Image: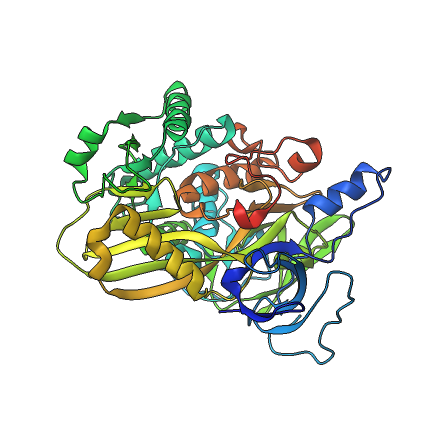
Length: 97
Length: 395
């Protein structure tokens, strides 16, 4: 069970959240090229290790939460509000790549 | 059953991944195309990946033409597989029934059934009365999801998954294919726009053609060649109960949630449901989804409520952005891609190997897999059977 520290509600169970994917993707400007939109919508780094991602607290405060989580160990390193810049753990941990 | 050879310095074809798809590819390369100087390299052991982690269901009940014809090819290969590779894979055409619970769902299933029949695939519409004769254990009067009928593919069923890996491995090995276990690929060497070798834990192996069949880890392996794909890796859990007396002689899926169940020959109920729904390479899931799957089971089959769970596990899925796979060239010469199987890879095993072998041998796709390209996303030719869009966690 993931226990996610919502910045507004505190630590809550995974079951209250809806996963919303890779949070490193930034929407291109409206007049950006088709390639830029292709990358934004479809291409994913899909890392085996630390992943910055969105979790929607749909069963709670309904805010979007940014989460740094390890896709191999399910460990959560940090959570924050959408505008926050969250850094990945400095030291390489087991399973990170 | 197969040799344990030392890697040769060079092969005509190197297949990365000794799962069902990689072994089937090697088998059909040798059998259909006479290409036998082939290595299958596997980081673990044969049968230790997703080919041994699925719920063994086979079916071809798809609606979109690209999928319908491809999966029907797979079904036809399943039907002749045991004679073909002379191994008992316990192919059991016990039928696959998709239950429906509302008028719109009935119409959607009728449409799918009609699409299947137009493509030459068997499909039958079942009334609740017909269903009651086939599967009396169902809760037809469930207050929230009453069962209004079902769509049956009688030729669908189950296959002993491990035996599929073993049969293909033995068949490929006996034709000269080297199966190299405990051999992990560390890098793909690309020179002058063409893939020429793989660096492995057992040394460098050169290949005239290099093919990836590593679903679950496709992003990781493709990255070695500098390719970024529309794939996310997700975990899917599956469950087996203690062995009980015969209860269910077909495969049943719940239409109002995601739950599918059959009974193995040992008596265990084999079932599964949705993805956990977050990127994961962990091969294990979490409790909320387990509870959700059990709730789905209780909604259609409350009689199983006191059956004890014997085992559960997770497998890592290549979730593509339209729910459909890749069997294609990659844009790098001599490098071929097979992946993106989402959670439907097992039933595709024979046709996947058959089409991938053709694509590698001819350096061009077969008509059956020509739609399963990477470029389809850029071209707006997605094959989105469910119509849910580019959110792999709900595909």
